[in-house]
Image (cartoon, rainbow, N blue to C red; front, side, top):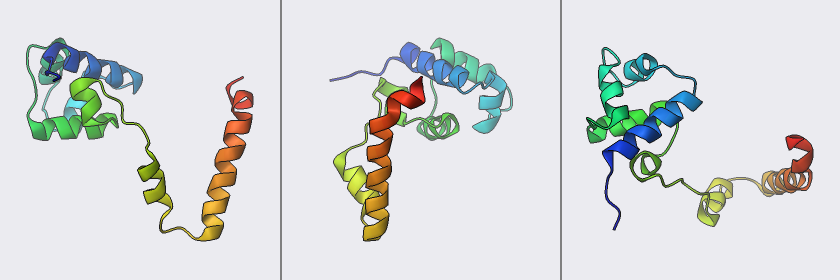
Amino acid sequence: MQYFDSIKYGERIKEIREIRNMKQLDLAIAVGYSDSRQIQRIEVGSSTSSIDKLVELAQALDISTDYLLFGKEEHITDNKISDFLVDKSQAEQEFAFKMLAAFFENKNLLVS
């Protein structure tokens, strides 16, 4: 069983906030706090957030709540891919497949 760690929770929020080039005040305003003090307390682990604020933080940071709470990254599964393609035409599905295949065949060219 995995337990909630408020310090790691705060560290993950700070890490993602900095990656997103957000200031504490930017994040505070995005989730409805009037100033950055609550974000600062959350980031150092001296305070946590309500479930509602957790969801708002995740949305503002464009990250899953699982990642914020436990450090688990959401991985794309076969079901997600199938769900995405289910309502697409055969031509759209084939095009998507060709785009993915081309990406993976040439990804080393994109990284260089």
